[in-house]
Image 1 (cartoon, rainbow, N blue to C red):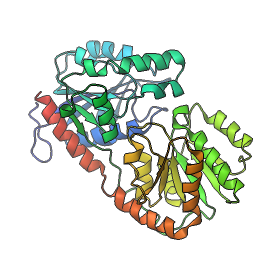
Image 2 (image 1 turned 30 degrees about the vertical axis):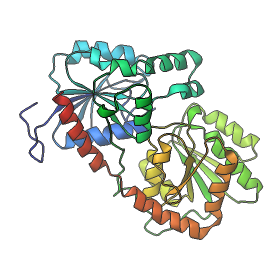
Image 3 (image 1 turned 135 degrees about the horizontal axis):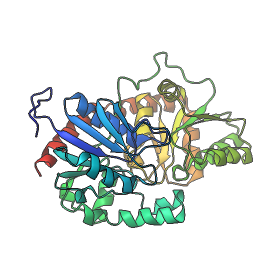
Length: 381
C-alpha cells in the first residue's frame, strides 16, 4: 500500500488493469465503458491506476485517459502475446498493490506474471457463442483458452458483473465463495428522460451497439419486417459499426425494409442520448452478454426494452416493469412484444415510468465504491 490517502481517508492503491482495449480504441464497446467509468472513478478518488491495453493502427503508444496512465502494446490479435512481454520489460520493476485482469476476450494469465495479488474481473465468457462470431480457428482457440480459466485463476478473488456470469463461472468449477457480483452502473444524471417528453413522430425501434454476428441484429430486422407486414408504420434505427454492417444492409433490402431502416453508423454521446430519449422501443437480442448496459441506459431515459431472455440481459430488464424478455431467436415473440408497446400508449407510459425507477437502482458511484472494497481486500490476499 502507498502512503497516499484517498478522499475519505483510506489508503490509496496502485492498481494495474490489463484489458484488451481502452475507450479510444475504434472497436471499444460496453466493456470499455465499464473500464473507464469504474477505474477512472477510482483514479478520481486518488488511486494510482495504470492500464495495459492493445493498440491499433495510428494509436499513440502512451496516453492519459480519465486520470489513468495508459500503455498500449500489440494489436487486437496479438495482445495476449505482447502484454506479458511488455509487462516484463516496462512495468515489472514498478510496485503495484494489485493487478486486475479484465477478462474480455481470452485470458492473458496474469497470475503467472509475478507475485503481485491478482483480481479477475469477468464480464462474460463466450463458450459456444464464439463460433457464431469468429472464424473456426479463432473460435476454437477462444473456447479452449476459456476452459483453462478455473485452473489458472484458482484461489484468486473474482468480480463478475452479473449473477449470470457468476453462475457460469461456478458451473465451470470456480469457487463460489470467491466470486463477488458488482453490477455495472450508468450515469443517472446524464441519462434522463427527454425534458419535453417527446418521442419521434413515427414509431421507432432502436438498436445501439456493435454490428457483429453474435449480437444477432438480424432478429431485430426480421421482427420489424413482420410488424411492417402487419401494417405498422414503423422505422428502425441501427446505430453502431461492425463487421456485419454490409450484411445487415443487404438483409434489410431482402426484407423490403431498406426505406424503413436508418443505419446511423457511429454516433456521438449527444446523439446516443437523443436516440435513447426519443425512440419508442429499444431492442437487444444477443444470446449471451455479461450485462446489458444499453438496456439500463435506455431505461434511465424512460425507454422500454425488449430483449432476449439470455444470460446477462435477463438481469438488465425487469419483466413488465422496464420492458419484456422473449426467448432468444423467437422472431414472432420479439415482434409481438415490440408491437404491443408501439400500439399501446398506456403501456408505453407505464413501462417508461417503471424503466426509470428500475434504472435508478444502478449508478457508477456504487460500482466504484464496491470495486474499491474488492481491490482493498485483494491487495491483502
